[in-house]
Length: 219
Ligand SMILES: Nc1ncnc2c1ncn2[C@@H]1O[C@H](COP(=O)(O)OP(=O)(O)OP(=O)(O)O)[C@@H](O)[C@H]1O
Ligand SMILES: [Mg+2]
Image (cartoon, rainbow, N blue to C red; front, side, top):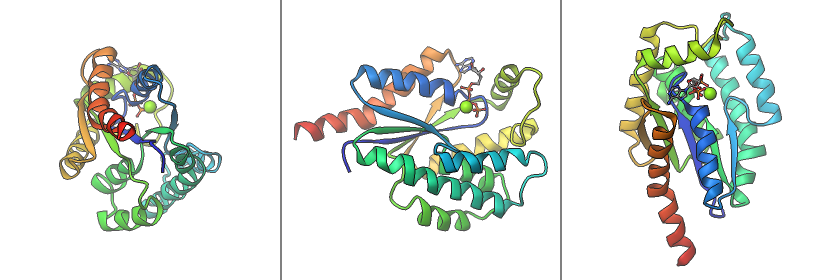
């Protein structure tokens, strides 16, 4: 593998993942780093088709295991066609949601056991684990308000149409995930201006990945 790095952004609805990915890509470009922006579910042709299946189901969602298998089927296609080729070409990959979303939504606050998710992850993701996962952390009320403001009057999808308790549980599940994976995960305080949060993220990415990168390329 080249010097590419795999970064994922995680967090509940409206925490600013998509907004911040845009800023991170700009800073990476300024640093002369070629990065691929992608997202889950989806990110490749086949995976986007599976994404449509999952989101179309709306309120009549698939049963938990079927839904999770669809997420992992999409992830497998995404890894094969987009993520691994980019990393192998030495590019950085910045992904809006990844396995941790499945872990938190289908495991932590969902019906599936972590052991089932661990098996699927070992099979599909295998050693293409993220180098760094940025978990955007925001009080549930603020995230929900942001998501609602952005959505305007259009209907919420199956995952957003949940109560404040759901969003609180989601936040706790993400914090627990970070606690269990301190080497990979960094919690980012996502309350503040877009620029402030972009700065917090850039500091962490620089600390964790850029310094290592320059040592590698000098050595
Ligand atoms: N720091 C911020 N302060 C205020 N509003 C913000 C901030 N960051 C993003 N927003 C706004 O909040 C809304 C949600 O942001 P964004 O779409 O980036 O979140 P997200 O985490 O990608 O959400 P989702 O999980 O639903 O895709 C958008 O309307 C965005 O413009
Ligand atoms: Mg988004």
